[in-house]
Length: 202
View 1 (cartoon, one colour):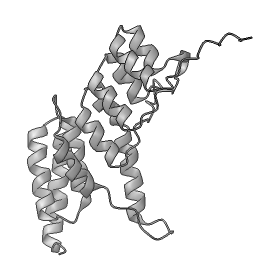
View 2 (cartoon, rainbow, N blue to C red; view 1 turned 180 degrees about the vertical axis):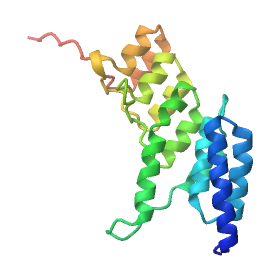
View 3 (cartoon, rainbow, N blue to C red; view 1 turned 90 degrees about the vertical axis):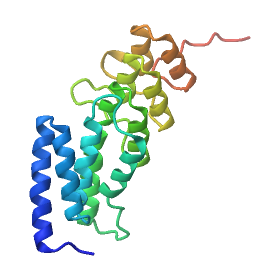
């Protein structure tokens, strides 16, 4: 059912207030306002997306996987069957791009449930950081976060990516002394470090 004009107006107002609270770091206030906005107009997926951002901003241990999955399903409109790009498709693409930038945040906070939920929703887990050129896997490996590394590898993260200076996930793990994580990455196959040439056999 569509919300009445009055409910739509109230929903937008509450949603704007919720986003402002979230930007201030007032997560508790933002959660109340955004949930009220969503209740006023359940058809508006923007409120669900704002709540996804809120969940990802939670301090450790971070969001619950089930709550995040439910919000992601509501926030990301399914792709349209039509070959003509629709507003829903553009919204989905924009939101997926925004979320891909937050996979790295989940990685450096060691939040495997968040990583798994984002990956299941179709978010790119190999998005490079604009400044460092690192992928989320490199960031997690450099911190020695075994759980985050496992979640990223399970989500299909590419361990062979090499950033500036020849740095890779395995090289950063080894540089920081995280031998177990480095071994996990090597066991995953390609890991961004050139192999030594094999001796010729007669």
